[in-house]
Image (cartoon, rainbow, N blue to C red; front, side):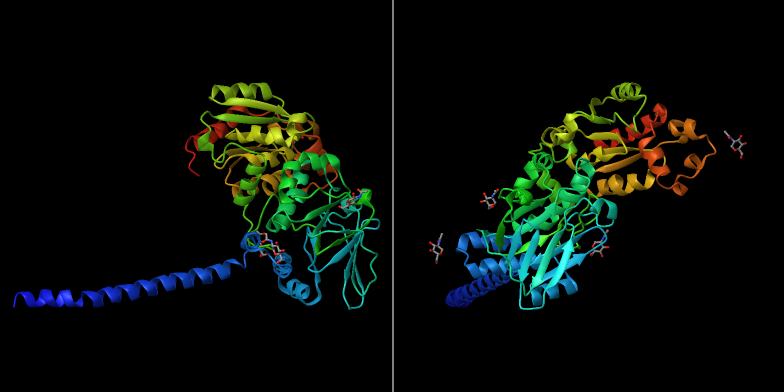
Length: 457
Ligand SMILES: *[C@@H]1O[C@H](CO)[C@@H](O)[C@H](O)[C@H]1NC(C)=O
Ligand SMILES: *[C@@H]1O[C@H](CO)[C@@H](O)[C@H](O)[C@H]1NC(C)=O
Ligand SMILES: *[C@@H]1O[C@H](CO)[C@@H](O)[C@H](O)[C@H]1NC(C)=O
Ligand SMILES: *[C@@H]1O[C@H](CO)[C@@H](O)[C@H](O)[C@H]1NC(C)=O
C-alpha cells in the first residue's frame, strides 16, 4: 500500500513532463507573440524605422514610407489630413509657421521658389522661415520662400538629392545667444531630430558666423554640408521638404505639441554630447563653484568686486566671465558653465547658457526693475523645466540706478507694468544698473549653497 502512491507519481511523470513542456511552449509562443506585436507598434516610431532600415536593406518603398511617417508627424489634425490627401500642408502658430511636402519637390535657389507638383490648380504660399512670426518689423529682413503647389512646370533639375530639404533662415536676431538658441537651435532640433541627420539644411540669409558658432549642434542634426542658396543659384530635387521651423515655447519643448515626444531632458542630453560636457548632475562637482556673468554695457552690477568677495567668503570658487569672446565661443563657454553648480547673472541673453548647467544646479537671476515678466518667461520658468533650481533675486528700487534718474514717485519706479515702450525699453533694459544689497543677496546665495549641497533634485 505504501508503494502505490509512489508508483502513481512515477507513472505520471511523463505526463507532467509533457504538460510542463506544452506550458513552456505556450508561454514562449505568447512572449514571442507579444514581442512581435510590440515590434509592430515600435515601427511606428521613427527610430526603429531607421534602425531596421539599416539592418534589412531598406527598399525605396520602405524609405518613402518612413519619410512619410516623419513628415506626417510634423503636423496634426486637419493639416495632417491635408498633407496625406494633397502632399502639401502648412501650420501657422503665433510664433512659427512651417510647411511640409511629403512628395518630390524642386527648389530653385535663384528665386527661392519651392515647386511641389500635383494635378491640382496652382496655389502660391509665401512664408518667412523664422520662428518670430509675431514680430512683423523683424520679419522684413527675412528672405521669403515662395512655394508653388499644384500644376506647375518646374525648371529642370540640376542636382538630385536622396534626402529631404529643410529650409530656414539665419536672419532675425542672430548675434544674440538667446534669440539664436530660442528661435533657431531649439526649433531646428524639434523639427529635424527624428530625421536622424538625414536632411539637407538650406540656410537662407546664410550667416557664416552663426554656422561656425553652432557647428557642433548643426553637424549632429545633419550629416550634410549646409547649403547657402544665395551662393548656389541652381535647381535641386529632393524627395520632400520642410520650410520653416516648429517652435514650442521660449527655451522650451512641449512633448504634446508636434512632433510629439520631445523632452527637455533629451535636448540637454543631446547638447551635452554635442559639446562633450563632463557633468550631467551637480553631485559630480565636488567644490561649490559659482559663475558670475559680468555685463559690461547695460544692466551692470556696480558693486561686483564686493559681491565676489562675499561669494568667496561663503566658500564658493568664483569664476567671473565678462561678455567677451569667451561667452560667444560655445565650445569653451558651454564647458565652463557646465563645471559650475551655481550660475549668477543679471537679466539678459547670457542666462540662456543655463541650458548647459548640470541637473540640480542653481540659476540665480538678478531680476531688475520692470523686467519681471521677461525674467520669468524667458529664463526662470524654462530653468525649472530643465531640472535646474531657479532663485530670483528681486531688485528693490533702492538698488536700481533708475531711482536717482526718475525719483521715487515716477511711474517708472512705482508702477513698471504701466510703462510701455519705448520708455520701458530705454529705462529698464538699456538704462539700468544695480548696486546689490549684499546682506540680502547673501541670503539668496546661502539658499543656493544649501540646494547644491543637497543635490538630489
Ligand atoms: C540591397 O539590395 C539591393 C537590391 O536588391 C542589392 O543590390 C544590394 O547589394 C543590397 N545591399 C545590401 C547591403 O545588402
Ligand atoms: C550647389 O550645390 C550642389 C549640390 O549640393 C553642389 O554640388 C555644387 O557644387 C554647388 N554649387 C555651388 C556653386 O556652390
Ligand atoms: C503643449 O502643446 C499642446 C498641444 O499643442 C497645447 O495644448 C498645450 O497648451 C501646450 N502647452 C504649453 C505649456 O504650451
Ligand atoms: C512723493 O510723494 C509723496 C506723497 O505723494 C510726497 O510726500 C513726497 O515728497 C514725494 N517724493 C518725491 C521725491 O517727490
